[in-house]
Every structure is written in C-alpha cells, then in structure tokens.
Amino acid sequence: DGTLAWRTPTGELTAPLLAKDGWVIASSATKLFAIRGSDGTVVWSRDTGPQRQRPAISGDLLFVPLASGHVVAHDLTTGAVRWDAPLGGAPAEPLVVGDRLYVGATDKRFYSLDATGGEIDWGPWKVGAEIRGTAASDGEHVFFAALDNVVRAVDRVTGNQRWQRAVPFRPFEGPRVVGGTVVVAGLSTDVLQLNVSTGEDVGKIAFPEL
Image 1 (cartoon, helix red, strand yellow):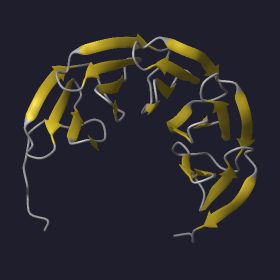
Image 2 (cartoon, helix red, strand yellow):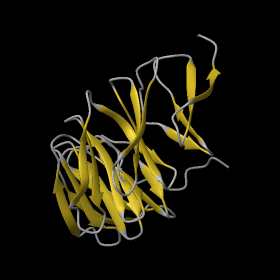
Image 3 (cartoon, rainbow, N blue to C red):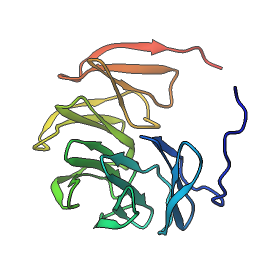
C-alpha cells in the first residue's frame, strides 16, 4: 500500500541498489551492506574500496566491482572474502552465468572469470573503446557493447567471437536479450533489435523525439 516498511541508515550511496533473493545490497563510498529484504536488518557490513557499479548475486556469492579495478567475491551470508581478482581497469556491473562471471572494464577489455576462484578464464577481449554497462547472455553467447559503437557476440565458453555489428549510435548501456533478439539502446530515439545468432538487423523500435 506504499507505507514505509523499514528504514536502514547506510550513509550516502554511490552505486545502484541490488535487490535479489531476499537481500538488499547497498554500497557507499567505502562500505558494503548486506541487508535482509524482509525487515531491513543489516546482516553484515564490510569496509571496502570505492564502489560505483551495482554488484551481482549468484548462489551463495556476492560479486562486488570496485572502482580501484578489482572484483571481489564475498560469501553472501557472512561477508567473508572468497577471492579478489585485479583487473586492468575499473569494472562495470558484472554478469554471472553458470560458473563464470563476465565483466567489462575501463581498460577497454572484456573479461571472463571463474566465478568460484576468480581466475581469468579466457581473454581478456581488447576492443577499441570503453565497454558500456553490463553484458547479456542467451546461455550460449555473451553480448557486450562498447563506445566504439559496436556490439559483439562471443561464445560463452571459449570466448571466440561469433559476430560483431556496428550500430548507428553510441550505446549508453549494455545490450539486453529478449527472446531471440539482442536489444541495443543509445543516443538515439531508435532501439535496435539484432538476431542473437547472426547479429543481423531484425527491426527497430522508434520512439518520438521529446
């Protein structure tokens, strides 16, 4: 009914909230909070480096991208650090599919990490510009977009490129998968739709200019 259910002080937040599987994860400039979604109880908190991007949850792990260029995996229930993986740049919001974590970074590289140990699985893929937002997957491919106005599809397991497609605008976030379509939005009133298997243009959604 819109009434206040609970309130938990965290200080100024520096990354978008993550709400999943009964948890609310809040990130401030130097602290990470794991909050019970049902009543707002802080289950644990940890001092961390600066955070600008939303973390990700998979199973009993919480994956936190730090502005210092690290991805840190915490035990979701206790906050204990499971692993700490240094990257070549500040990571974006990660995507977890199965036992792998996929993330772009400001060093213009796209990484695949072993979700259980943090080792680099393949790559990293070097592209011509900073990678934008979080990646997407249809279970077989992983799709990511960069500020060189190119969307790329790579094999989720091997990292081999399956296709790449130039788009007529600069993406302002990562792609999304809707059924058999990769949806790409950017600095345009058109939202582009690409075939997941081939990258071919299968239409667009046009919005009126404001």
